[in-house]
Amino acid sequence: MRISLFIACYNDTLFPDTGKAVVRVLERLGHTVDFNPAQTCCGQMHWNTGYTREAVPIIRHFLEVYREAEVICIPSSSCVAMIRDHYPKAAEESGDAKFAEEVESLLPRVFEFSELLVRYLRVEDAGAAFAHKVTYHASCHSLRSLGLGDIPLRLLRNVRGLELLPLDDVDRCCGFGGTFAIKNADVSSAMLEDKIESVLKSGAEVCTAVDNSCLLHLFGGLHRRRLPVRTAHLAEILACTSEGAGQ
Image 1: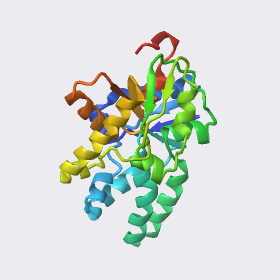
Image 2: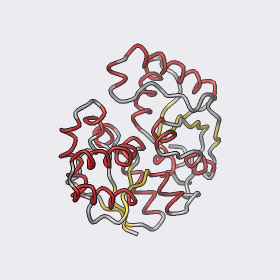
Image 3: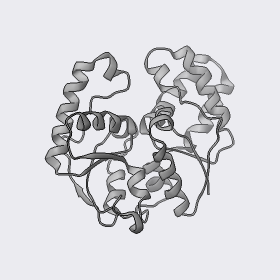
């Protein structure tokens, strides 16, 4: 199968290894991955901060870039949530019937990475090996917007050598929330401290999630306190094999 990869703009800038990991996993499973360099942003930041008019050209560009794509894989549940929850609203508000038709055609082809593996490709064992103690943080968009449930956990349980440790209050927000962390810094920091305490209590060496935005926030808090826990996107764990189990 030919799978088109969309990389969130912050991933492209800050976490290029996540996209590379997605490619390694999908190619290992026998799929062809293409990356259209014309891609930009899903428009989420503009839409969520009230710049809905400015978001529309970005949305239309996304539709143009992926018009011919068979399946679109996005290693970010927040981007997928933006597409599923708000692209239809943008099209409806525009009053443009063709715009609405293009959005309707797009939605069934868009998948978050772990969702693509388990729900669409029917894969729960990606052939990975990662000899570390790992805990999983459920990001708000993955849990509440996409309803991923235990999908990432099912993938992690099939990683050889990995010890999966439960995270207390796994359903609580880490406090990032995009621009929320900027506009409400004190509240965001307090929420982050609670989440870090849960991560430490788990005894994990690595905290993973399906959103690097959450992991960026968590890493910042862990790093400032010089704590011996690192973060890694789920795709980076699944990309490891027996030859790289200690990464």
